[in-house]
Length: 212
Figure 1: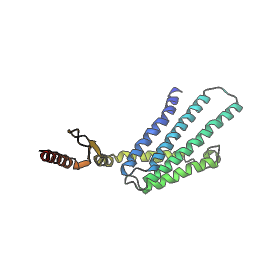
Figure 2: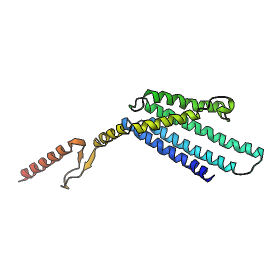
Figure 3: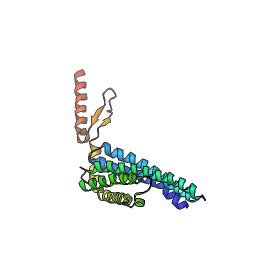
Figure 4: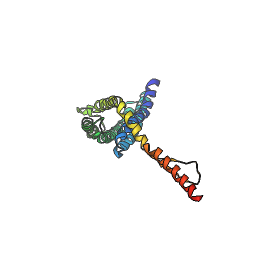
């Protein structure tokens, strides 16, 4: 029981960390609002899943009558629907961000859109019972498999990410304070830093010559 409770409690934070890494990879190509929304929605979904699993474990460990068990069962059934809604919307947002990404493309985007839409639709059509109880297909395993393939694709895209990180960081403007306190701050941008330093030194020398 203790091991199950620890796994249930760790699922939410682990999902948030995984989605944070996926968002970082997607943002290397172009930061998008959809990737930020997907991180937020999936993190909230992870919180709901951990809460649902812990409630199930806690209720299952307590003796109860059949009537009380049915009412308690409705609590985690409702939390399960909330989890499906958040993870489905988060998957849709990730799929939108993957559409024009060189590491993912249309295959991941369209499959993610189909699974992300199907998960909440099927679950709310059979509310409050799971789709499998109504004889429908349960899209839960499909979305888990999709994220597993996405995770594998992320590992295979590390070389691409390592090539993108220096280019992104190298073009970031940084403020450099010169030795002369009376001078203003200079702006260094990537490879033009040496040229700016040489120009500033010539200007200071010329200014000192004119004062003489």
